[in-house]
Image (cartoon, rainbow, N blue to C red):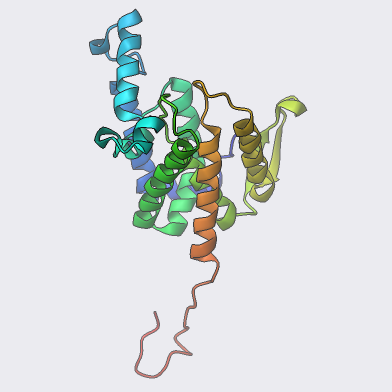
Length: 243
């Protein structure tokens, strides 16, 4: 499923009201291009040499559940570094598309600093949740999917009526528009079903998607469930300025 580039999100980006979203996309792209995954950095060689460099690179900067749960010192910061490492062009472009579409409006609503902290914290917790569920796994986990899933969860709570264009395989990939409250729960349900059938080998960390989505929705629900009271100038007590 692909989110539609809404006019509001585009306006937020064009008017530079989403610098954190811009920065995250830029950082992920630069790190990918200079790393071995892109295949564009000659310093990592080609063929088997490149594959070896990729494995070493992912293990150094990605999350290895057995090492993280085992509290190895080297693994402590990997939930943060793994958010900026991607395994392939498809992996990178897919994540950045979702961040570009859903991140701008969410950042505009939350504020820049709050959004940045929210993104990193939920991304780390999503990776940690996956690691706890696969504590004996030595497979490396990289990518911003958990953090971006949290953005989707928050977006669902903050903008449930926003129209999202979706492509469904069983409908011959016809582009259909649905509100976010229909599309995003359907997406996370698919992630949950996929997580239940995932093997223990390399693949997509669907469980991290589910954990991130639920964390993002829960945070937005708790943070924004009570509307902020705004005192009008007419009703403000004498001698006090309205907030």
